[in-house]
Image (cartoon, rainbow, N blue to C red):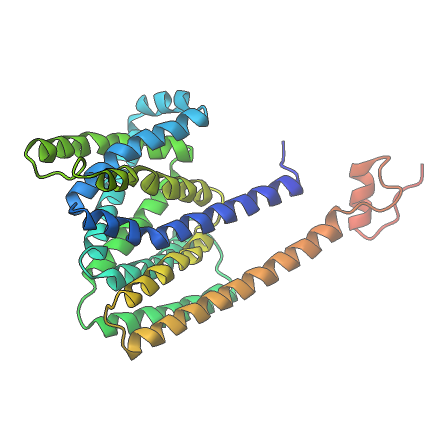
Length: 334
């Protein structure tokens, strides 16, 4: 049965809210990792706790969504399990690179990586999923590309951190869009695959006195917080990615690096004229894309009203009368 326009519109709005929510959370997450670092935890300890506590939160989401049967089904499908194993490796690489960057004074490099990612998403959407990029999207891509080039020039070196972040997350998004697994189930399977090495590392550093989990109540809190900080935005992302065009998800992602960019600048990382110029180019790109999206929605709404609204007297034989009306003919009398 075809979904009604109102149901489709409601799901589209929910997907948009989920997409915006995940990128806002990711924008402020450097502050969370920096708090963990202030408690003495390095990137590998943080990653261990993300894997362990993330699994528990992901399990909670699966149980709330009543998707445990789907988890069992995935375990019986080696091909699907293999794709999720690959997505787990990609997201773990992304997480580790990001934590190392924001805790070592390279927050602006991290922001550049997530400015690159939407460009890759739009290209992948057009190439893999045949998503059409309209005039606003094309202009926005050009402006954003100029902004990214300016940021790269401002760094003065090959932006390896940025490139790794962009490539791993773009690839992760593609896999999650193609794999026929619900968001909560897929996320749980990824966390499950990462939990064993994560738990082993946490146990090792705690046993050898190198861990910080029990160092203080504050340290315990922040390391426990790694669970929801990891799972909630990823769950929102995976849910939205399966219900929105990949190109649209890509431009929503400009929210996160802009927040990260501001955090890095406020914390005293070098911000010269080229980086300021790049910031301007990227936000002009977002404004152009947003304007195009608004115009597209308005045109779609007008078209839907023209086609869907029935003429008086067309309800006796909807199929025949509607066809006559669309062809500009007078409905047959009865």
